[in-house]
Length: 329
Image (cartoon, rainbow, N blue to C red; front, side, top):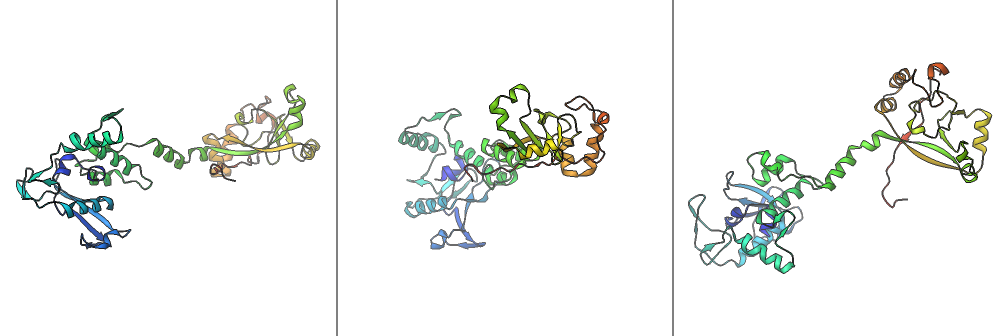
């Protein structure tokens, strides 16, 4: 339990002292034999001995570890004080038996082989041999990739490193964390919008669409666009009224809306930086976009200058993409 949850080097685990576990509740200490240690919000503290990169320090650990150490201390036979090679002092080591403290190699040479044998798994994997350091690196990565993760500097203090550079080796981002960070960054939501489109199912079923007849109509608010590659049109944000455009107020537009067997759908539209600025920043950005597109040909061929597009063009009625939960209604 100490090897798995303390996040310490094997030498530090072997040199833990009796009384290294302390309990606190609301900042107040709790005796080790008190029943209060089982309270949900009780903090378990572990005193780490002097180690290779620094002095002794204290850190929080899982209460399960504290309870396991307390259980061992209750049955631990009385042992004489043993010399601590790091401090040259005689101390009561937690893991001592028959007047000898446990060797720092005990985890690698006894504990890990025994556990692997009982579990029926090899003592090595794709990362190499399973050593005592594996638990330290694993729990460090888990703390760094948790739902409420530790910062690099907090993890540095918890591991007892002298510099954050040493901690960075353990702070590896898992694919799940990377995916969550990408989703939280909102790149897709910021750069993609949706627009309503009517699909003429009769034109598709009869084969008229294959012969070049319009079969999909993008809703521009003030009219319809029948350009098949609408998402590639540079004028989609502010239609230049080319030959693919049909005003809603025209008889053709009214006949379309009255037509039966039309299916309403949503189409995803990826936005350029200029188009997103027009959406987010309003009329000033839209005017800049219109000015830039003045001499850019429309899908039908003529430029907006040649078509004489109105100066007060209406912005494309697009909406934010709403991501629903899988399996939701």
